[in-house]
Length: 523
Image 1 (cartoon, helix red, strand yellow):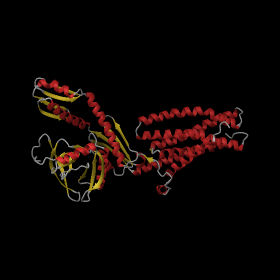
Image 2 (cartoon, one colour; image 1 turned 135 degrees about the horizontal axis):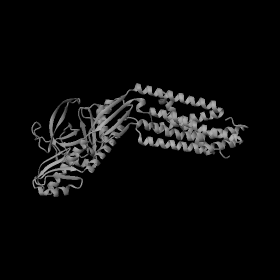
Image 3 (cartoon, one colour; image 1 turned 90 degrees about the vertical axis):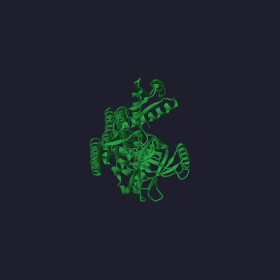
Image 4 (cartoon, helix red, strand yellow; image 1 turned 180 degrees about the vertical axis):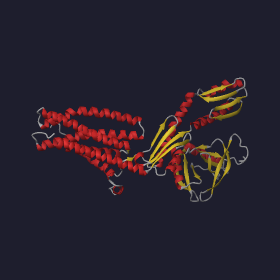
């Protein structure tokens, strides 16, 4: 019969409702009851946002000058290589955040040097004296900064994921800031330390002949070595001279994991990629009997001696670590190093008590709004109102189930969106019922009036929901965490209301009319 759902459509409706009830159920049960559910049933409730369960909000300032400084140090190395290959004499080469300065012994070689360095480098100076300043072009500097911010966001997201925080927010703010939100983070200090660590891992050969208390040559570097006892406790620090240029870098790692050293103290095992394994094997073969330093963020954590060639591409970092610090360091190394240091310029901690109060207030608002809508529909539409109320309950179950199944985060604005979508779902039913009333007044029979009401209201409901959905998409694309939570809940609620208000309500009302055969519709 026209207007009736087919057997397949009815089966789909039943399956959707059953799955919705299963996935929504964990949100309605206490934690103990969820853990006792059978293994085949979903047991994960919705993830709560920062404003509901508490956590940390951090604003990080990215030290972009570090990027410039590193870029110009690299340019300085390139200048040395170009000068050596082309017999260009120079003195006083120095790299800083403002560029690379040097003096040519033969000023007439300036065009040759400029041509070998490429278009991204600007060469400025006094042609008579040979004093030059080399800087990158503005376009290339802007590209460097953009690339550094993108890499910073990627590394921070990886670190937060490794840290185990559910549904974190990591997004850029302005040109040099990053906002990090960690819902449910209990140890904020630990999270802040892990997220903000630069984690620049390098491996340098130790120069045993250099005096660590004297003048360090330009191609050497003086660092501090952590001296720890057998229990892993830091005893002291002493200066150590190493080669300035690292033999290996942290970007050659394939994995890192926490472990224990020969004394049973926490340590970090690292494995190199194919290139790193080859370089490490070559280095350990040629430098047997010499020390190499494992340097993390400018501090030497261990400086063992190459007793024999190491061909397996594995090493161990030991030092003054606790078990948690070793785990965090392994997670940080797996996520990669930050291209520049970051400073925490703003920190807000939301306590769990505030989160619990917010949840209770939001739940109360949802319950009151839901009950008010149910009472309104029953008083105004009677039997039809009861059918609409059943569809409304199904709408809420669908919304909760979708957010739980797909791991969407529920925020306080998201709760407001749920209440809003419940009202909009009822609005769709009101449109349908009013159109049915018009069909009844026009003298149509009950079944024809139902069919005409649903057909007449369909286009209006579709247009209204599509325009609202477009607004929700814009909010999600342009908004931050809480705004996105609102947009997600609103979008899911709109799609659920289309299913319940049109498909489920039609099925129930058509079935009731065909079974009862009323002479008139009580609408």
